[in-house]
Each structure stands twice: as C-alpha cells, then as structure tokens.
Image (cartoon, rainbow, N blue to C red; front, side, top):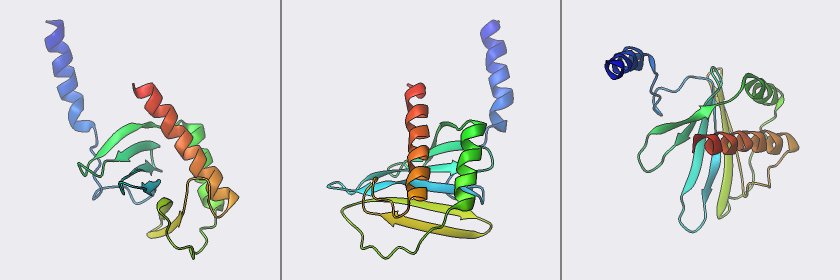
Amino acid sequence: MRAIFYLLLAALFAPGCKQYTPENLPADHVRFGSKGGITGGGREYVLLLNNGRLLFDDEFTGKLEKVGKLTKIELAAVRADLAEMDFPKNDAAPGNYNTSMAYHHDGSTEKISWRQPGGAPTPELKSCYNSLMTAVRRLRKTDN
C-alpha cells in the first residue's frame, strides 16, 4: 500500500518537472566548457541564471542532463561576475584544445574562447570560469 502511495505521489509531481532541451532554454543562461584534443570531443555545461540549475550538454545524445543546482550565494556571485565582466574580442586563432564561455542575456550573446583552460584572456573570465567548473566538480561528486 505504501509503495502505491509513493508511486501516485511521484506521478502527481512528475509533470511539474521541467525538461530542458537546447531549443527551450531560458533567455538568460551561460554555456561553458572545453572541446578539442585528439578525439575532438568535449564537455559543455549550461547554467540557467533564473534558477541556478546546472545542466550537462551531452553531445552524443543531444540531451541536457541535470547536474545539480548552484547555491543562492554561488548563483549571486556568478551573476555579479557576469554583470561586471568585459568579453573582449577574440583575435586568437583556435588551438587544439579550446575553452569557451557564452553569456546569453537581454536578447544578445557575448562569446569568448581561448586555447586552454588556464589561458583565459582576462583575470575576471578566468575567475568566473574556474568558479563555474568548481561548482560542476562539487555537484558531480555529490551526485555519485
């Protein structure tokens, strides 16, 4: 009887869970990650700025997988960093392994990419990228 109750409860709340796809992302979000190397593959994540949800963009399935959610303090810090950040024009030629960040907000997109995870063109970009990746590692660790 208890199992049936929990199944009904789960079915009741399941339609309320939003399933994000690359086509239905909120307008304000950040894409970040790295690609390249021998395989050409990479890992790209999406942070939804409206709720702090962090998603993994699985290039093989084309689906966005839930990684977790940033704390309110982490989300506020990222928002503050992005508001003050200058996305310089990217004049560098692509390398074998590239790191990138794209900030989608107010109907526009600011993009930047650089040759390696540690080689961000400005200290602000490097700091913001590192804090996002720290959150990814923390959330992935707690997921297992």
